[in-house]
Length: 136
Image (tube, rainbow, N blue to C red; front, side, top):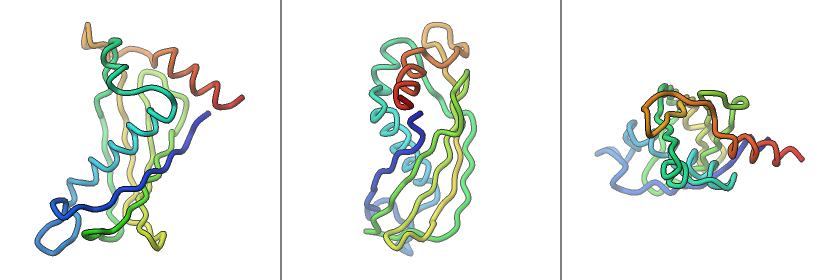
Protein backbone atom coordinates (compact mmCIF):
# COMPACT_ATOMS: atom_id res chain seq x y z
CA UNK A 1 0.00 0.00 0.00
CA UNK A 2 1.31 3.45 -0.91
CA UNK A 3 1.46 4.88 2.56
CA UNK A 4 3.85 7.84 2.57
CA UNK A 5 4.64 10.70 0.23
CA UNK A 6 6.93 13.72 0.68
CA UNK A 7 6.81 17.14 -0.92
CA UNK A 8 8.83 20.32 -0.47
CA UNK A 9 7.24 23.73 -0.03
CA UNK A 10 9.14 27.01 0.13
CA UNK A 11 7.55 29.50 2.54
CA UNK A 12 6.46 32.59 0.63
CA UNK A 13 6.54 36.07 2.11
CA UNK A 14 2.75 36.42 1.93
CA UNK A 15 2.34 33.32 4.14
CA UNK A 16 4.07 34.99 7.08
CA UNK A 17 2.96 37.46 9.72
CA UNK A 18 4.63 40.72 10.74
CA UNK A 19 7.32 38.72 12.61
CA UNK A 20 8.23 36.70 9.50
CA UNK A 21 6.70 33.53 10.99
CA UNK A 22 4.27 31.38 9.01
CA UNK A 23 0.70 32.32 9.95
CA UNK A 24 -0.89 29.32 11.68
CA UNK A 25 -3.78 29.03 9.23
CA UNK A 26 -1.44 28.46 6.29
CA UNK A 27 -0.38 25.05 7.59
CA UNK A 28 -3.77 23.61 6.59
CA UNK A 29 -2.95 24.60 2.99
CA UNK A 30 0.43 22.88 3.20
CA UNK A 31 -1.34 19.72 4.37
CA UNK A 32 -3.80 19.95 1.50
CA UNK A 33 -1.03 20.31 -1.07
CA UNK A 34 0.70 17.21 0.35
CA UNK A 35 -2.56 15.23 0.37
CA UNK A 36 -3.41 16.18 -3.23
CA UNK A 37 0.09 15.21 -4.35
CA UNK A 38 -0.14 11.91 -2.43
CA UNK A 39 -3.27 11.09 -4.42
CA UNK A 40 -1.73 12.30 -7.70
CA UNK A 41 1.33 10.10 -7.06
CA UNK A 42 -1.11 7.23 -6.68
CA UNK A 43 -2.42 8.04 -10.17
CA UNK A 44 -5.66 9.85 -9.26
CA UNK A 45 -6.37 13.59 -9.27
CA UNK A 46 -8.92 15.41 -7.12
CA UNK A 47 -10.31 16.98 -10.29
CA UNK A 48 -10.83 13.61 -11.94
CA UNK A 49 -12.47 12.23 -8.78
CA UNK A 50 -14.88 15.15 -8.59
CA UNK A 51 -15.68 14.89 -12.30
CA UNK A 52 -16.48 11.23 -11.64
CA UNK A 53 -18.86 11.81 -8.76
CA UNK A 54 -16.80 11.85 -5.55
CA UNK A 55 -15.80 14.76 -3.29
CA UNK A 56 -13.43 14.59 -0.33
CA UNK A 57 -14.25 17.26 2.25
CA UNK A 58 -12.20 17.49 5.43
CA UNK A 59 -14.22 16.41 8.48
CA UNK A 60 -11.46 16.71 11.06
CA UNK A 61 -8.23 18.70 11.26
CA UNK A 62 -5.79 18.59 14.15
CA UNK A 63 -2.52 20.51 14.17
CA UNK A 64 0.14 20.58 16.85
CA UNK A 65 2.56 23.48 16.40
CA UNK A 66 6.03 22.57 17.66
CA UNK A 67 8.40 25.16 16.16
CA UNK A 68 7.99 28.19 13.92
CA UNK A 69 8.64 28.17 10.19
CA UNK A 70 9.82 31.42 8.66
CA UNK A 71 9.89 33.20 5.34
CA UNK A 72 12.00 31.40 2.70
CA UNK A 73 12.34 28.18 4.74
CA UNK A 74 12.22 25.03 2.63
CA UNK A 75 9.77 22.71 4.36
CA UNK A 76 9.29 19.00 3.80
CA UNK A 77 5.73 17.81 4.28
CA UNK A 78 5.44 14.07 4.91
CA UNK A 79 1.94 12.66 4.51
CA UNK A 80 1.11 9.11 5.59
CA UNK A 81 -2.09 7.15 5.04
CA UNK A 82 -3.17 5.79 8.43
CA UNK A 83 -5.16 2.75 7.25
CA UNK A 84 -7.06 1.37 4.28
CA UNK A 85 -9.89 3.82 3.59
CA UNK A 86 -13.56 2.98 4.01
CA UNK A 87 -16.10 5.81 4.01
CA UNK A 88 -13.36 7.99 5.50
CA UNK A 89 -9.68 8.39 4.71
CA UNK A 90 -7.22 9.47 7.40
CA UNK A 91 -3.75 10.96 7.09
CA UNK A 92 -0.97 11.84 9.52
CA UNK A 93 1.55 14.55 8.68
CA UNK A 94 4.92 15.86 9.77
CA UNK A 95 6.35 19.14 8.55
CA UNK A 96 10.12 19.40 8.86
CA UNK A 97 12.50 22.29 8.25
CA UNK A 98 15.78 22.02 6.33
CA UNK A 99 17.57 20.86 9.49
CA UNK A 100 14.98 18.04 9.85
CA UNK A 101 13.55 19.78 12.93
CA UNK A 102 9.86 18.96 13.33
CA UNK A 103 7.72 22.07 12.85
CA UNK A 104 4.24 20.54 12.92
CA UNK A 105 2.44 17.25 13.60
CA UNK A 106 -1.04 16.99 12.14
CA UNK A 107 -3.91 14.69 11.29
CA UNK A 108 -6.83 15.00 8.88
CA UNK A 109 -9.88 12.87 8.27
CA UNK A 110 -11.83 13.27 5.04
CA UNK A 111 -15.12 11.70 3.95
CA UNK A 112 -15.91 10.31 0.53
CA UNK A 113 -19.11 12.10 -0.52
CA UNK A 114 -21.23 11.55 -3.64
CA UNK A 115 -21.45 14.72 -5.72
CA UNK A 116 -24.92 13.59 -6.85
CA UNK A 117 -26.51 12.91 -3.46
CA UNK A 118 -24.26 14.73 -0.99
CA UNK A 119 -24.24 11.52 1.06
CA UNK A 120 -21.24 9.48 2.25
CA UNK A 121 -20.04 6.65 0.00
CA UNK A 122 -17.37 4.00 0.34
CA UNK A 123 -13.89 4.65 -0.99
CA UNK A 124 -13.99 4.20 -4.77
CA UNK A 125 -12.65 0.90 -6.05
CA UNK A 126 -10.18 2.66 -8.34
CA UNK A 127 -8.40 4.08 -5.26
CA UNK A 128 -8.47 0.75 -3.41
CA UNK A 129 -7.13 -0.95 -6.55
CA UNK A 130 -4.25 1.55 -6.76
CA UNK A 131 -3.44 0.97 -3.07
CA UNK A 132 -3.45 -2.81 -3.65
CA UNK A 133 -1.18 -2.45 -6.72
CA UNK A 134 1.40 -0.59 -4.63
CA UNK A 135 1.78 -3.69 -2.43
CA UNK A 136 2.63 -6.01 -5.31
